[in-house]
Length: 169
Image 1 (cartoon, rainbow, N blue to C red):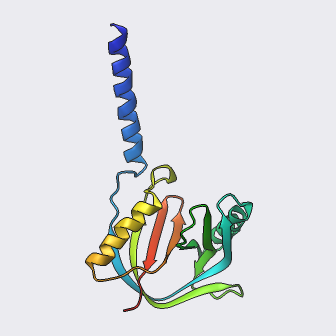
Image 2 (tube, helix red, strand yellow; image 1 turned 60 degrees about the vertical axis):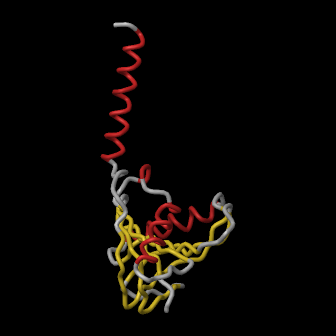
Image 3 (cartoon, one colour; image 1 turned 180 degrees about the vertical axis):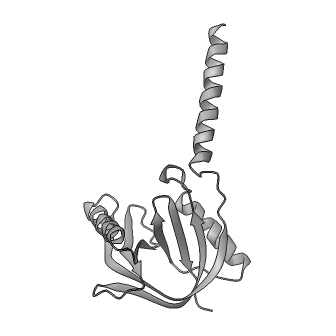
């Protein structure tokens, strides 16, 4: 067999492996959106505003994740506030719980959300801007308008729920 055929077969096999891994990790799952109203959502945690590279953000995330893992009634959650500066982030990092804790919290009552679930490995999850774009289109098609934030709820390693609160009419 000449070298061109060997390289062609190797490239073809590599491509098939990459595609299989992508599908296997959940990368081909479509985003499915739905409208949901919750009577109350309370996120306990701490605010952060700064650059993505600030080690404080990782510290807050790790603390919240460890708390959620240690407490069955808590689920890791991050509120992302949409800001125009691409080099910085404004978040509230913590956990959701039905149990009351003596900690800082953000509370939302009687809120309608546009919701999607993402069941994919972090390596192949859709980009946040793609999720926002599709959520905005769903909201528009359903007569809703998204607010300027989103909430990520991490049920498990590759089980993410994203909520987009809607503005009151």
